Image (cartoon, rainbow, N blue to C red):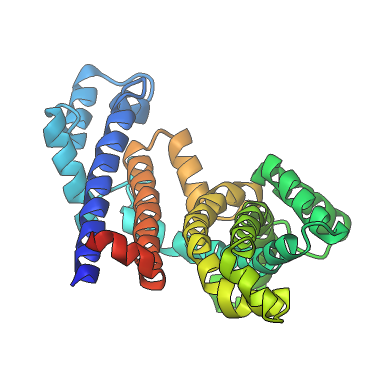
Length: 319
């Protein structure tokens, strides 16, 4: 019963967050300087042409009418690009096939890298290995993801020639080997930066568990540090780690949007940049909303997973 209450509470919180995010995004887009109709038609247009386009775009309508029309078009898939006149669904179809695998691949690599390094950094905190891992995470936190991408392109693509510097195959996933190879270096770019953040959180979580009373009791009964941690501390250490993993999964999507422009990959990042440059505001507005919605939904799922693995959270909800 309490589990259902928690799920309902999470769902209501998610819906409120999505509503507030949509209002904020809609307001910020409307606050951008300039006239969308004038920017679309260019120089030399007549007032009649401007008025006609404003009527087609609905920008001559009251603000709340524009907001309702935007949500309707977003949910029904009727948003059309001002530049290419293509529906948003068509623009997204082949671009998602690049951004989503890139994001998930980067997240998988980050988990594979950061979980063992974070645990080792905690278990060997006073050894040279633990200090070196902590130093790596400190450096990674200070390095922007696009800078890492530029360095990796220079070293592994241009100098060594081991990987392509982008160039996603025109055949797409019909040639999966080429597609995976083109996304490998961008995925490592995102994973390196994500790993720096995740290592610090995992290290901190494991250290908190190692300092607990039940771990000291297990050690006094003859168990090694690793045995005590795997038998008694792993589950408790995983609870806060699940939260950061969920956050970083959303970050991997946002990181993919940035890295795609470094590697010239025709994904959502390139579409967002092109739409912003050409002032294709309907596409910009919907892309930002979709990315925000994904992040909020992932956070809601993380809350649900945390409650399922940590009985203390369920007990707090029951109070």
